[in-house]
Length: 202
Image (cartoon, rainbow, N blue to C red; front, side, top):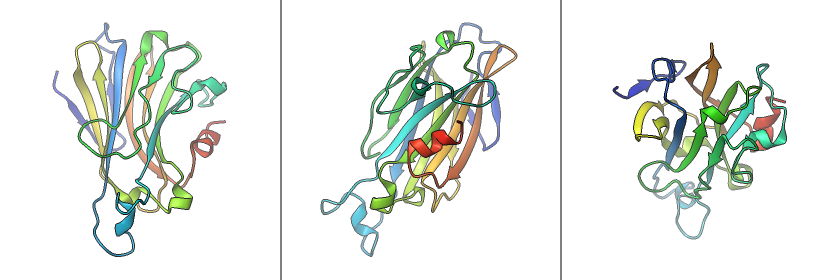
């Protein structure tokens, strides 16, 4: 099975025809855009100024698209869902280097019956005081991997210009007719913290 490269708005069946698939690794990556000199030059790792700290999180929703339990938010402050189906690998503070910057492990067999959708979001920590937005980030992507054999199932590269946006709703895993699908969302928002993103679903 070759890797499916998704465009914004596309969906893919994950478990249909792949009955043994239960354990997924969802990797998210990004890089700071390199700039030199000028007003913005200092933000990118120079002179003791702040790096851009992107945080990946998962919001677990019921069939009405609502988050009903506080523990159904998995982020750097709560790295494991109460049911144990979603586990966060931990916070990456800079986004520098190759490969995934943050990873989430999802065990589909442990997702409770009242959870119908897992929404993957990324926001910029402390974006207001640091005056940072996703126009300063490049090469952002989300990929879904079969954790049992490390086979990449699909990848979605976020290629739009997200200048002025401080959060991204990247993609969704969701139930459909007892199967699991992935949808490439790629929607930028001006939410400045994970708490604001969660309010969209409360």
